[in-house]
Image (tube, rainbow, N blue to C red; front, top):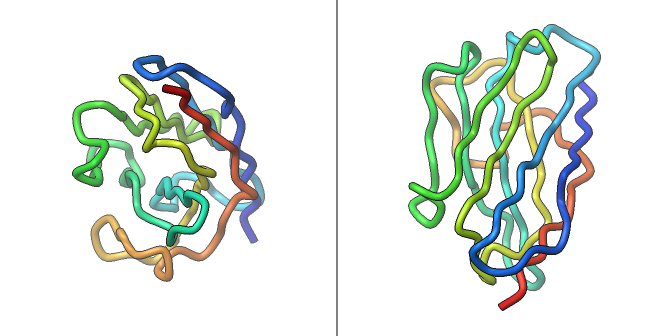
Length: 125
């Protein structure tokens, strides 16, 4: 079992920045591909970003490319999502997720094994 706890959400004006953190416990963090997803009210959950086990490879949704950066610190069992130039359409609950056996960096939520409880991000216009 892997437990994931997100933090760092909040209310920010459009154009502002936030950094989300997700700390993992329970298993060897570096064995897991990590991802960030989000779900806005009335919408389906969508992929945001993913990072490889060692942190050298990343993948982003087109909607956040160039504005968001995913990274990880395996010594701290933590994955981060730096969000810059935030837009009102980025408003959502953000979830981190972990998968042990993965080919590449999955963008489908169903491929992830463990999920955090989510943290709310609200961007005002």
